[in-house]
Length: 467
Length: 155
Image (tube, rainbow over all chains, first blue to last red; front, side):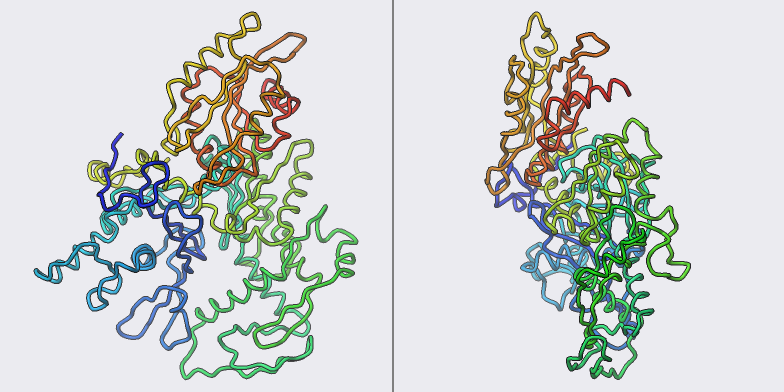
């Protein structure tokens, strides 16, 4: 098998497994994109997949959390679509390069006068055509770094080819690999066979993995993830009595403490330009995330939240207080359970516009049922005994207990065992961490698609090799 | 195929042949435990034994260790093949089973590499009957393994 010799400068400084390579790992999602060095425990750079776009002339794109601030002629866009597949390849290329080059290798920056996005890994001799040098610099941006990328299991062949092309042609990576996120999550849980439930931002997906391979027919997904939960919270605030105004932090100039349920006393900032809806929505999402992390909880079961007596029980329990950026605060008790119930029960939760409503088939229990119905019945027992839960939204309190109760009720008599990493970082970055370990292995040398293989076979090599 | 690139030591299939030659009259081997070398580059034979006491075998797996990348020693995954004897329909039957042991409380690093390397081992073990994935000490109880084997025979 072709093995890619690495230039001496890429030889490891930190020897592990004898011949570690300094590979990079990139894990793009709809809400966040994660990038870092293979062998590290967590990704060094985590940025929103949202980016800023300045609409005035000349239009330009701004990357990084710190650039997404109130400004004129400014929109917030996302290079991914809600299926967690790249939507805008031109921006994806810029965003990834920004992260892999600028964020991960700051010491190699070229003077800003040359090219803001591209690092130059070669010594400049100060001669020759500047334009040529820039082209060359761009081609060499990652010439010393093998790149492992993750992808959703439903990623299209075309998008996979585009990824290797970008990596090889634009960045000059010496080697490339694509791994499917549920396979990485399954392996990271120590399982070559598992039913992976990934509760992410834009999607929740269920994928059966058998002997390290995705069972394609099993793949199920729905919007029942973090953003859908946000829409439930919006609706809850909207219909609450009194109505809760969703005023994101950036709009509040100052506030005075008020009693619970009393109207907020805050002065809002005035902007001499129009704040674009997309920016406001992005900032609202930050606040909603905070609410999810600190208040929302999944009804653990047994049975559904709507069953007789459950709501009365919750009403007798202590609630949680949440203070909005404008100072308004209130105690949330039964609502904080009800808001997450729609993920499990299509008839529960808060009414949302038709387009955002989950069908029964899109609830988490039904996704699992469909996934298991799509595959050989003999595999079911083994998969249910090896359920791997990952994704940030699965960190909501009570999630695993509820899942366990739902599965026990759906499959009586079968052993159900749920594995979810205890460390929140392993749940949030599960796929990235798996990729980081793989790409750091000396033996992984022989797995990489080398530049030579790519040159001989073209983009089609990725479909042949990364199965 | 292996997704980590790990190799398999030739000793692995040699010992496996010895296990396959075994029967209750001539018990050369009862089980073999395999581990990844300390640099995680290849799968090797850690221990091969003719001892038929399940508990001794189980203890060996439960006490297995691996090094994390910082060098800290923690619980470790293993692979094992076991010539498993039991009664089925009133007859004595032996089936060679492959056990992929990966304790849930091992570190993410060894778990990832063992899971990603298992296919390489499988390809060099020609002729085992069933494969069982075990992730906690209960999964390694004799009764759990027996139930898993019976379920597969009845499937």
